[in-house]
Figure (cartoon, one colour):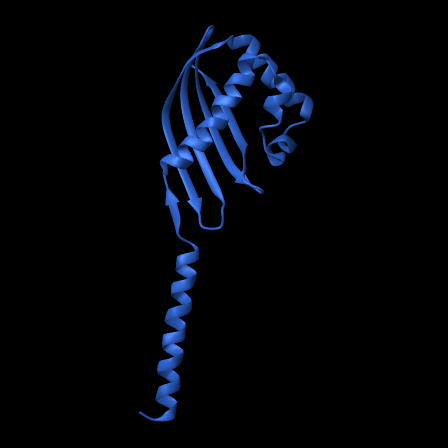
Length: 146
């Protein structure tokens, strides 16, 4: 093997090694039970604050990006009216869930709940994300009355 061929083989080996490292960094884990448990605890807190009509605590669970989508007062009114119209949460059922955690400590979570309140039924959707330094925040929340 001549010198040029040796360099080409070495370059190919180096390229394969580096591409393996890149693919390893981008691996993620989907639907981990541990991630489901962690994110479901956030939803439980949310509903606990909702039943207690503790809007300030509820607001603290949303990401800054979500809060910026609304005027703060609009979000306060929305959460207050929701509580007043629906009453207390009687039962919540997970209809669908998905989690995905990457190797760089970022995780996203998705839940759909079919809920029964004193005054009606809803389908509620939560999108959450783990933010630095590891706190899970709600980045999107939707409620549809059934």
